[in-house]
Amino acid sequence: MKPTDFAKYLADFLGKYLPAERGMSENSIKSYRDTFVLLIRYFSEEKHIPVNKITLDKIDRDLVCSFLSWLQNVKCCSSSSRNTRLAALRSFFTFLEYEDPGRIHQAQKILSIPIKKSEKKSIGYLSIEGIRLLLRQPDRNTQKGRRDLAMLALMYETGARVQEIADLKAECVRIEKPYTISITGKGRKTRVVPLLEKQMEYLMDYMREYNLNRPEKASYYLFTNRNGNKLTRGGISFILKKYLAMAKNENQALIPDKISCHSLRHSRAMHLLQADVPLIYIRDLLGHESVVTTEVYAKADSRRKREVLTNAFTQVLDEKKDEKPIWLKNGDLLEWLKNL
Image (cartoon, rainbow, N blue to C red):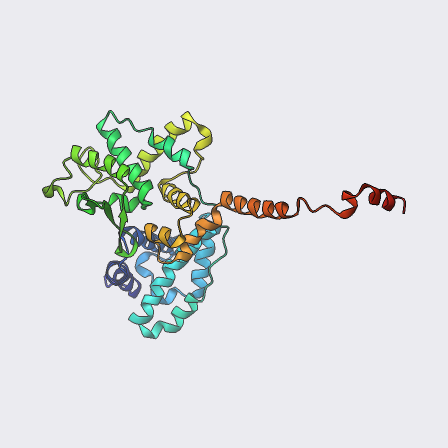
């Protein structure tokens, strides 16, 4: 059976354009793929059109708008998820404009569909005391506990994304001074993050225990499971959740409910901000494209906002606290005014 034009262009988009030309990570490509899985499901369930009958002519602005409404009303997706799916479709039709110029008008009508405003969730993060409590949970007397401590401490210190931690290899760590680690993030861009002496102690002890400091192990993954395979995002998330539960049993007040691997990244950014580290340095540590992305932490730091407002208010009071009106300084004048 001859493939449809939709099938042909979708294969080129996911298999060539996104990885080769856009340099997207595997996880980003999977997210885009999931959008089209949902679109195909929409065609099947709502339009009763099987996948081998889907053509580009059937995907116009009205259909995309109907698909987005279906996501929210039938699949109960949030506005944020709806916008993520729209972004994937926009990227596909931007690609299509160059691949098939005859469809520019069709593509531009779809590209004109607006992003839907969504409520921005507050950033979840741990306090410094919460981080200390979390890092006290792994059992340092066991090999697995020492691995987990080294990994969680590294996640926090570097502010790395969970996939960035999973992809680390032994060769990424510079084991001579100055200690650094090379982290490859979104867009396959690599950033070099300095490591502090204390962090390096934990990491080097772990690497020596697993012989990862040897030259012949340079290409080995830094964090692996019992079978020697690299830890997945799900595996790292499972490890974190285990220690979060233990920490919460010890001190519930220090461990909020909704904390994830990404929360360690948020925590590091917030703590640096609270230590008056300039946003531009935090941006470089986190691997953000623009400082505008990093500014979300400045907006989220309610403690710092309170301090600034309190200090400003106190200064005003200090300037005026001794400036009593003349009638309060002079008893006779006050009495005279009362009787006026």
